[in-house]
Image (cartoon, rainbow, N blue to C red; front, side, top):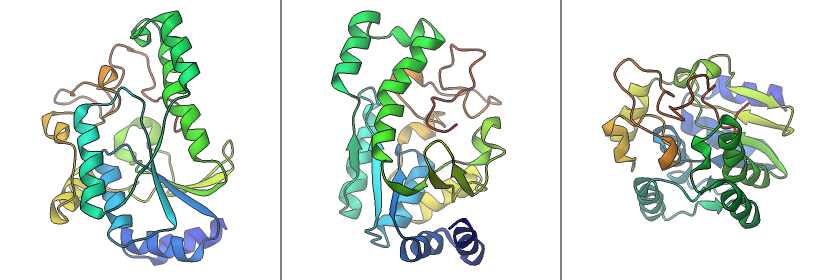
Length: 231
């Protein structure tokens, strides 16, 4: 299957063509995970504007998202008359975590932050990816040093599926230009210096010259700036 995916990617000229060809030619369950950030809105537009029904679009609602993120979610569904499937944290797990550690315990240690990320993101993601053949992402090399070595098509050994990163080599300017040209709803926080947007308590705007991921878990100076979704 990898050779077939690589051939599709190599021969398709646009994002839209790549997604359409993969949806037509690759068997199995194909999913796209969106957090409604600028990159994900590009991919969502390419899927919804072509009415590609066999690519399931889903999101992880951690319960701590920005109000602006929920607004983009709503606008996206209305504009494209489409549904984004939501996955939520296990209620017993998050209740136990908060009751034992506190509502904002993630500020207290890296381990507590990673536990919170696992409960709110990783475990729901694992459920969302059950039986999936291909996982489409909005990852870009420019986002962090951890993502520089990625390929457009990758085999995820842990999850036993292929990851397709169609925007891997796109620049921020290219992403924003695509959104504007196609009138795609996007998070207004991007215009306020929030480049990478996650949970509200764990995200701040970045300063000029800072790394793309500097606004995520900023209190962890030695952090790898990842939550465990993408290893």
